[in-house]
Image (cartoon, rainbow, N blue to C red; front, side, top):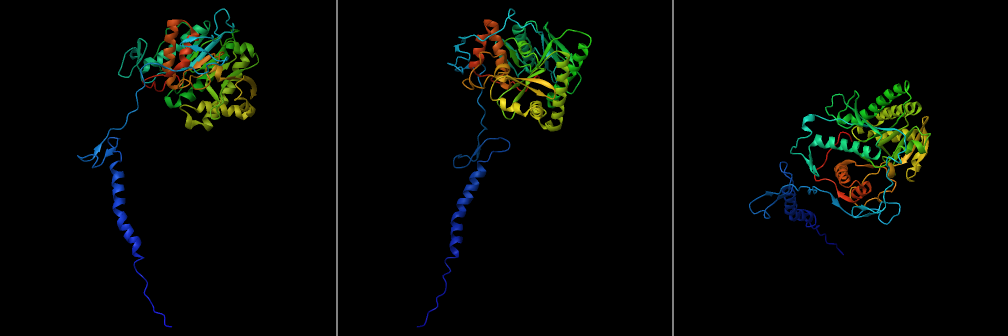
Length: 414
């Protein structure tokens, strides 16, 4: 039987072409829609295409961040119901924090040392009100003025909690500011105090101060212990017991359960003996070297804390296993006896929002107002001045949710 040959249908190859022709208008419309909604470079908002905008392409302004209220906002206090945490009824402390007084002061002489400088400012402008102001209570602060207010509040808290202690401010010789606090003195130390180099310079200033102190100890018997701190902290009880309870330590660092930054550089205590000061000099020199070799890209903010952790881990890796236990312990780092103190007590930071963390321990000794919390430091001091109750003031800190309408920005004392 003969087989009839039939030609192949040519309709199939044209099918993809037909589909492409049908979908092309849709692709074009979508691309036009994406372009019309693209943010204009000069406005930063979104643009409505026709027919949503009958009069043509209309651009909406870029969304703005919601303003934070220019006052403290209070929320529930964390840690309520726990016997080892501060309990608050409103702004009244139910169980008082173990605060110090002149009667139970440890007797060990302590000097606090901080690094502070000002930038592109005239001291005469510190009391003037500019367009960039923050109001706390009855006071309005310019950028320089609020930096000075933080520094003065730092000194005032020390005068209340440790009335026999002194404060030394290490600063750029070119800085133009003055203080009228009897227990505080300004000590200029040469160096590079620019913003990008400040954390590196802080270590150099610590070393220069300790070397000067070591020379003084060669000719005098007057021994005082040294605590290097940030100036945005509030000392709320006696810290002299560090050197009394742990008589063999040369230095003390504060730790937290944080893998990236387990050590906080805002609190370093040094025993004031010749041995303690010399060991501290060698320790800081090693931290400085680690900083310069490994962490210069983080020089503006975190380099010193990363270098601290690097030095400790190099000599005492076992210390990192204890950082989650929240208990003080000691270890040896390159011949220096280091006391590790929990941040929860010696470097407690208010959470950014009430209800976070686990409240405030009853044995808290130092409150650290990092970042946007600096406004809260001034509010807390104003509250204390009106009540003279440190425990009640700590309830205010614990319950505070919002700290400032305007960002306090980068504070040169950090």
